[in-house]
Amino acid sequence: MTELRECLKEVFCIKLLAAVLSNPRTAGETKKVKIRPVLRQDVLCFQFEEHRGKQVFHENLEAEEAIERTMEWMEFFRQMQIDMEQQSVTILVSKKGKVTIRKKQVKRPESVKADLSHNREKQYILKEGMDIPFLRDLGVMTQEGKIVRSRFDKFRQINRYLEFIEDILPKLQKDGEITILDFGCGKSYLTFALYHYLHEMKKYDIRIVGLDLKEDVIRHCNELAQKYRYEKLRFLTGDIAQYDGMTEVDMVVTLHACDTATDYALEKAVRWNAKVILSVPCCQHELNRQIHNDILEPILSYGLIKERMAALVTDALRAEYLKKAGYDAQILEFIDMEHTPKNILIRAVKTGRKAQNQDKIKACEEFLHVKPAIGRLL
Image (cartoon, rainbow, N blue to C red; front, top):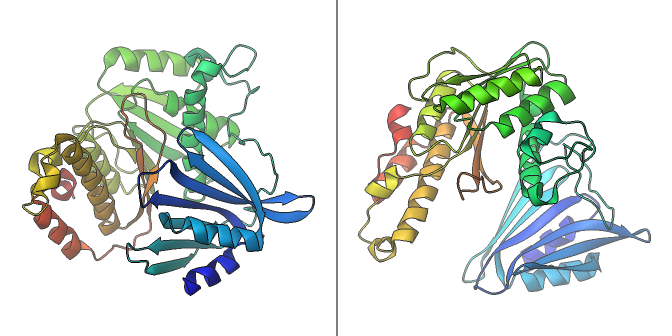
């Protein structure tokens, strides 16, 4: 554990943005611990936020105590993810106590600094008091701009989505029109949020096309777009697999597209040379019907476990195929959609550097006896 202690000595400083201890070794009450720097009477401390059941407990410690407390917590957790101003650190602890530390340099804007306020409020992109018509029509905001408490989860979800958009803004051109395609847009509250944020707040020249199968929903969305005078936002009735109305786009969004519809959307995005892909998959049945392995048979005999494992494998393979196609792909935690309990978001940014991972993908697929649609399509 000497290496771990030395790493923590470097971490607990003014350049720490945040850290999260997760993946507990046992099914105890504490699920995770978040750490961030705070200033208390001009003294740099570190606030530990322990998530125990439905309760949250806070403790503020100075650097040396924080290191010792983290060492204690790492007896209970297998992983610690650390974000610094210019570095990302992942610490893994095996069952036998072996510590693996991975450090990666990251480029963040110079403006990214730790929020050292002791009692900080969440800074949302869309704030209470703003004049946001679509939030009023959704019932999320009152006519006076107050957030309806019973709809606060929706308000939080929309803002979380926009945070993902904010992260990829440097990848989108500021000059010239940006084309965005939203597959399976549904009621389109996130589509309206995207247009409002990029066009009204950030002043980007954008054109968004929303696509969905439900004619009545599409008709209503077009009526709202006209009502808000969102001139470059339109909605079409159509199927993802058959749609071929574009030749090149800047960003493709696919939220809660069912089963292999997500794969068709990803394939279209790659073919259209999309700079950014954001995908929140919904139900994933394809691999659940295929997945089989004699060694894993005792685990896969439980229907619920098999279903969840198949869904996770599906999304992981999607990310790997996107890497193979020249994207930097990440799997991130989102907020549960109203249409699905799935809370995974695949975010892919085009780099042009194609990962040489075909052999590993093939070995994984052969081990689990699966042939995902994304593999056939790409």
